[in-house]
Image (cartoon, rainbow, N blue to C red; front, top):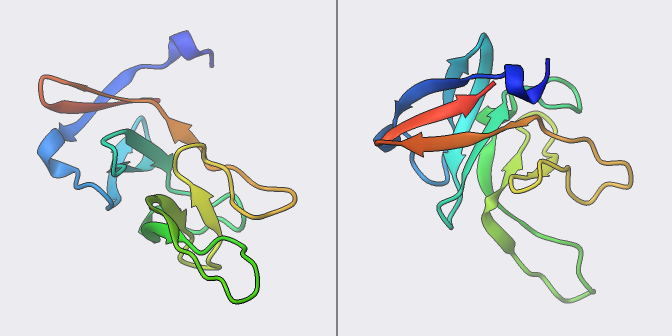
Length: 123
């Protein structure tokens, strides 16, 4: 299926989607989690962890504790990281890439648009 074959599917009013929380919808027969990042950008994620098939969108949306020097502990990227509920793998909601892995897996992201207060996902 080419990009031009995809269609925008209405999934609900903008007010149904809280920042920092995944809201599950079904669009085009696919279960998708939709959220807004802290800066207002929208993300739609297929509800399937590429690692072991977990319902990824039931995980927490938060930040991460990146690798740091001994004695240092920093929390970063609050509201931009999706954590798998089964194994704790962390995924960057901006890019879909698994974080801190040598051979990262990648989430399936879908384009989101908002028109006249309604949210649409392109599947």
